[in-house]
Length: 436
Ligand SMILES: NC(=O)c1ccc[n+]([C@@H]2O[C@H](COP(=O)([O-])OP(=O)(O)OC[C@H]3O[C@@H](n4cnc5c(N)ncnc54)[C@H](O)[C@@H]3O)[C@@H](O)[C@H]2O)c1
Ligand SMILES: N[C@@H](CCO)C(=O)O
Ligand code: NA
Image (cartoon, rainbow, N blue to C red):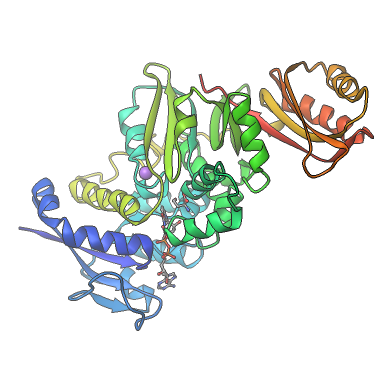
């Protein structure tokens, strides 16, 4: 039986999971492939560190270039992260004629356009299923399974750490910092967890999803990005009382003059399936013009699920690599010369309903002053909830749900609201999506 040789960059959470699968599930993989896969070399940072997996028979090196220049390696699997050295290594590997598997969404979102072009020149494949929604085969589903459709929009819970934190925060007394620490211990978080909490990781993934949905170039720096760090336990509770769950969503949709790409906390009606996706689970919805709304669900982070996608990509490359044109499924699912560099519109252009929370002085006539501000901007209030503040004796917590309005109108109203004497402190605004 023929053996394909693989080299790994990085032996952390996902690297360890990949070694584990290739060691323990090889008989089944051989039956699928009719060939075998062998890891011949792994680059690690510290050669003396104890390993969670058995590396007997595999060469370990602390020089990453040993992997990308290794004469026997057919496929380089990049699982070290970062966008500096990782980019240089993959460029070298591609020029050396090696195929690439990576779980690195930051690298693909920020440098995918040039990496894919280099790969085409060198007739090698760059696969990145693990980069978006961990173990869910969503890249394959969208690039291949939905190929008959014009995709109208994509929306997803695409950060496992963030969804885990929001889910745990529903429990009474949950502490944000402690919950994040558990997510890190479980191997879900990025090396810098602010990427998870502040939405940067989700923005990387949304960039990729938007490109494969619409056939546009990767444009990470155009994504509007808001994290979950300002969402309070109060917001989660109020949302639930009003019939919603708060989810951190990435949303890519067609706009009048281009596309809208945004990541932010979102109120989603409880009865919508995606509102019930909890813990480390992710879900991506894609609406095609023929198929209608579809949803892909599964674990979004962690060693086993992510490595499951990494190994599936290795298998896919082995199946395709000796075809005359190796990248028969183009990297972004559209022929490379058909990609558009379409404009991404400002967040001010979107239209939705809003959840507004603020602290108001518990005085007569406050509600009418607040309503007057919204009326001036032609915004109607669909729902109001008020309760005494437990923290400030003379204040009340006020929650409003607006009708569907333009972001620029709500910004104007919130600026006027902030100027009212009756408003105490910051105003929280969360967008609402019904995902119909
Ligand atoms: N953990 C997840 O659930 C998950 C899911 C999807 C994608 N990813 C992505 O997979 C990649 C790896 O993530 P991880 O969670 O396994 O991270 P990790 O920190 O557990 O592992 C990365 C490993 O790479 C090694 N490394 C870094 N620089 C190196 C260098 N110069 N030389 C040798 N070794 C080096 C580190 O020592 C570490 O062991 C990242 O791009 C991440 O975004 C992670
Ligand atoms: N840190 C990422 C890993 C998976 O990409 C997450 O929590 O979703
Ligand atoms: Na995936």
